[in-house]
Length: 98
Image (tube, rainbow, N blue to C red):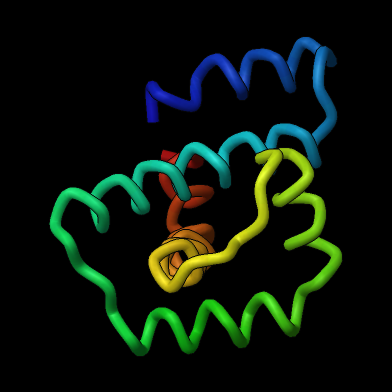
């Protein structure tokens, strides 16, 4: 969780909004997962399908994420990473509580 410490500090200082903090943390986790998938040369077809479904069901969040990131989600690996990040999202916040 130390990786997100600076983002959390910015939020509690009022420098960034809750939404900005969430996008920054989501982007950090997305990049971490995407890098791992890339290094391993791995793509999970089921994760791609879940990612595609999440993207279609949550266009507002996906749009904000893509604008923050400065890039669209255009590859199977990115869709898989997006799904895996979304699935890890709840655990991220549980970890902050501990």
